[in-house]
Length: 294
Ligand code: NAP
Image (cartoon, rainbow, N blue to C red; front, side):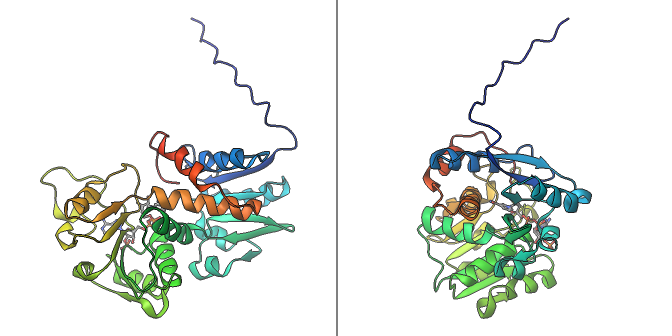
């Protein structure tokens, strides 16, 4: 039995002069970041390409040095490398240093500049998609992991009046809250009712069978109120059961696709120095098949 040959793929747009960037993580095969970057490069008319580099935790030091030696212009850094890369780059932006996490490196001299576009991407999406400016507003973030820390810092930097962190481990919650400066504090789930913005930055609430345990919610939807902006950083599924419950309560509910698009747009800007074509990037992911985060 002979296996059928795959149809040939012609890529005359790629050449020895093509500038290469990529996403580095483990896993990366289903990452939507190359789609977002490549859409931006095509729209900008740039001879650049973005690909996935699957790199295990034990190989990150070698991979970063090798990528620089090969002339790679920049990398989007995803799980599990964001913390490690913060300790490996030659220079970090003030925000990346504060977070101790890097989600993007930019070629600089013989080494890398480490940036973090997650939180600024989240706030850019809030402003664009949800018409919500955090300035002077009361915000509550559930979770204290990498995504939560980026969001808390960005809300503080955007002038939020309050950034309340609710987390399972209270010590981690207090550490995260401190990233928002004087506006930050630890809180309890019932604080959500008095907030203008509620963000789920945990993986909870993605799956909840009818009649499932209340513990499956990141926060009891009964604590949400009409008119609030409620964001779940998860975007697959596009509407989590928790987000659907928030919408039923009258909240303006959004998923994490906006953060994904805008953090990638800011990476394109950092690498190329050009204004990223955000609308085209939005269209690319809205028309694409669902995939896991990254
Ligand atoms: P992480 O660093 O592992 O943090 C997970 C957080 O969730 C921690 O605060 C953890 O609490 C809490 N948590 C986990 N399981 C829990 C449980 N059973 N009960 C209560 N709390 C629990 O993860 P991350 O990287 O921040 O990602 C968090 C979510 O954001 C994920 O769903 C991820 O897919 C999503 N995300 C989206 C984007 C985007 O672009 N839209 C970007 C990054 C991440 P403890 O501190 O107590 O352990």
